[in-house]
Length: 67
Image (cartoon, rainbow, N blue to C red; front, side, top):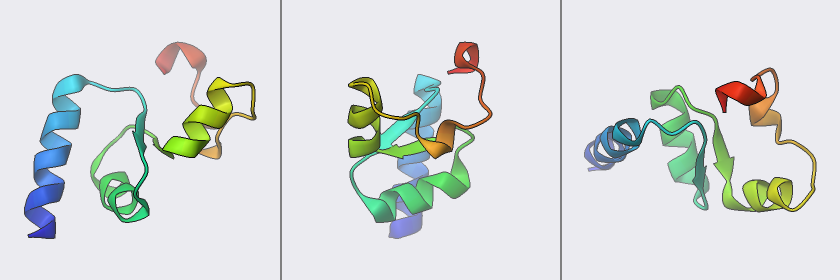
């Protein structure tokens, strides 16, 4: 069941061509990280960065124009 759910999520995310994916669920993040090419951030990391916090480690080495 978990594999089917992961594949459904991956298909939907790839259709969006997202540069960054955010999730609030650690298990979901772990499953998606192995299947997607886009960086996976926890929702709190994304909010912290968006409000002036440090750039998340998942984005290290990715040029801003590629995000």
